[in-house]
Length: 390
Image (cartoon, rainbow, N blue to C red):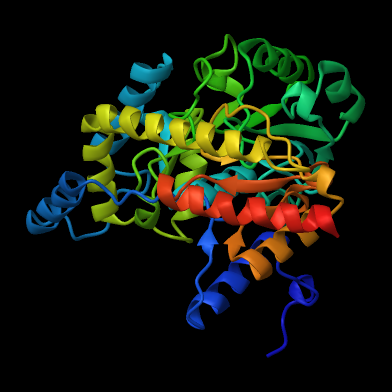
């Protein structure tokens, strides 16, 4: 079948190619130790599942309201006020089919053709594609590990043009695992106000900030009216398969999202919403408990990585990712990731899949048990010894 011209030369990203190779190896009976995918290994808590089942038995099997059920939107507001001091109302909340859908709908509503969006490298791969598919122009900013993979105020000003419309943030960061300080956030906020920009702030890893407290961008003075906050329950509440995210944003944008979604998804799965509502209202202790487990795993893996020849890993800060430098091995990111998969049976992602700044790094998701993580580190250590002898 003949595809639309805009897709005729489409190729899978470095991330997708690794995922496809993992699927092939698994189907052939040789599953690797998979440190490539950003999905918690914990299953959804049984009482969350029970809450969704009760809702089904109570008759919640019809179309949901377009913005999401009121009780869920109230739960989102309460969660963010409780944890991050952000005050909002249900009219400022839109329930989406995961965080990616939230970002897509927001960019669709905010961008005019040719509008530029500043994105900090390394960045989650779909961001640039989403900006482009919605008529915008992604402008990526090279950053440095020394500065927490965030640009300075001077670098932001140098990158901006009269066409700059917005900034895309993601902290705690994927793939970097970095957490910006409040001062760094305040500098970005001052720039956004100076240039009258919107800020799309992906904060799905907000519950996993290990060195200090997560700074909610919308809660900074003067930022709520220009911020689209993206959150969800996939990472914090181990509900990736439920496909539920949300936006907190000005009410007029939420109204537009409702209209646009009416001819796209027509609402979000009813039972996922009921499960998420229960989760947000009852699971704070479990979220803290799992966050501590991820922090311990990351510290253990970080220690092993820094003992390997050619590897250097900065301290774990947030999310559940480590982004070690592999420059000392003499291999490119792609070469390292593919050889590690094929020769050692360990799957990681090449840093180059996350923008040019990511070259020389790999992304490791600490989403296996401690035992399996240590097995993966044993294999990786042997691999780096082999590389050093070549």
